[in-house]
Structure formats: structure tokens, C-alpha cells
Length: 422
Image (tube, rainbow, N blue to C red; front, side):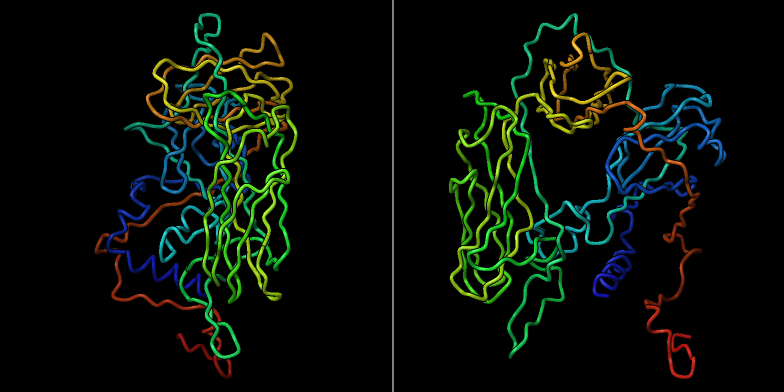
């Protein structure tokens, strides 16, 4: 109930400033077609699905896709003109996460886990037709491996993370008499975490397979742990990697900690083995409790994707471009595709050696987000149903009312079948 009321009150309190709170993307003159994504992956909307909602004859270049107020880059199987019944819109779809929840907290740093949403794991996507302006499309780009003069990139920075979703932790509390009173705000320690674990108990996490790049030019690996206390005791937690202690931090009472420490590269595997990371509550009080929200290992990785069939990674800006040789990517049938989501490029892999995918990427002035995808049919998720949505501009006087009632179904049940709200 707290979350429902807070979201409603927040939404209505900012009504006068709505154009700067994530609805500035809406064009009220346009019709939008809504669908939901609950699993991250590669998605397609077929031309027959578009035809079923009356937009199958729309020229491909005019389609536009939105998520959380941001335009999503899309690929159309024909770049311009009307699509045939075998054509489609393709995009990398992402489930909802906890990043929009950050604004609910008293302080942004209080959020310990933004991987999972506190509201829903399902993201709403909105497809529309835009005949004017810029539409974010992924353009087929020549993968000129034969003309490449660059050396293969030796490594990229990889983040292996474990983001606990065992329960929503209540967060900050005060002992009042014989019972605990919890903060009614989104406070420190609140959010998705592990279960409580007591003094002397460890939480063990396994990452991998790890293909650590041991070259001296690469940054040192980093371990990050976000944790919180859950009892009126002081305690200390310790972190071990493959049995070696690499750091720790104190947490008093219901406070929280965000540990970040470098570790020796010698603790990591260069050959695809798994790595164990252990967080131990070193408290001495027998009734102590603490939780872990996030455990991350950030390290320079070889370009070996460990048998994955979809793989996200990032590369820093490079005005010379990049040459990649990628091993360990699982695919069959169609040639794998690399999406440069930042620069709007789509590269077909060079598979002259099927076990080593090669890409010659054009220069990029900014850090770029990339995703390598398997184009086999089993890896593609179809969007089969879209719902028409026409947004109302409540900024117009004609659409405004004199007051708003905020209620809940429980409040409509009165004595003898009456409805107190009426």
C-alpha cells in the first residue's frame, strides 16, 4: 500500500511539471501501439502482425519504438518502402529494471540493487509511426574484415554480477520498545536482497566461465559488494575470492555499505573456469542479521564469450575503429549479427573461420554498447499482440478537472453494502 500511494502522490504532485518527468517523448497527435517485454532478448514484429493493427503498409523508415521515454534502435528487414509479408522489425528488448525506482529513494545512494524493479519486471514498449524527424534505425554496415589493418582488441571490460532477488528487504528500522519500526520512506537497505544471514554464516556466489586477460596494460580486477545490516548490532563482513580474503567493511546496525576493492588478477581464471566469491558475516552477536543486495566482479576479459548465444558488452571510444576476433559464441544456421546500439550500426559476422567471428567496426567518438545475437529462429522472440493507445494531454485546460480523488478498492466497502467514496 505504501508503494501504491507514494507512486500516485508523486505522479500527481509533479503534474504541473509533467513535461520533464518522462512523458516528454509523447506526441499527442500520434497513435501508439503498446506491447510488453518481460524477458531480455532479441525480438521481432512481423509484417502480418503490423497489418493486423492497420499499419502493415507503412514505409519501413517511418517506424519508431519507445521504452521508458527513450527511443529504442530498431532494424527493419527492408530499410525503405513497404514491407512484404516476410519482412519484420527487429530489436534488442530489455525487461524492466530498478533504475526508474532510484528517484523514489530519500537519497539516490540508498538504492543497493537496481537490477530488479520494485514494481514489475515487465517493460512497456510503444511502437508508433513518425513521418517527420529522426527515427532511430540500425543500418546495415559493411564488415570490411578483408581491408582491416588494425590488430585484434586484446580485451574488454566485463562485469559479472549476482543481483539478489530472494526478497524485498524492509530496510532502515528503529527499535521502539520491544518492536521494530521501519522507515516509511524508501530508505537505506530497502529493496531486493538476499535472505538474512547470521553471524558466522557465508553467502557463496559463483561467476563464470571467466576468461581473464592477464596482460599488463589492462586495469586490475575489481570486486564490488552492496550490503546492509538488519539488526541493532555492529558487524563486519569479509569477502573472499577463491578462498583468499580480498577485503571487507563494517556495517553498524541498519546502515549500509558499498565495498569496492581491487584484487590480484592471479585469483581469476584465464581458461574458462568458474570463480567463487564468498561474503561472510563476521559479527559476534548470536542474533545478528545482515543482507547482501549486489555482488559484482569487473575484470578485463578475453574475447571469448563462453558458449553464450546472446552477449552484451561495451567498448570505449576509438576514433580508429576496432577489430574484434570473438571465440566461444554459440550459433547455428544464419550468420550471427553484431548490433552497435549506440551508433546505430548492424554488422554481419565474418565466419570464414566458423569458430572465430570477426568484425571490423567503424570509428566511434563515444563509448558504445554492443550486443552479439544468434539469428536462429529459436533465439528470436515474436511480438504477436499490440494494443492501441492514444494518450490524453492533461496539460490542456479542456482536459483538466477541479479535483482528484486518490482511493483504493478496500475503501469502497462500507457497512450494509454502501460505498463511502460515493
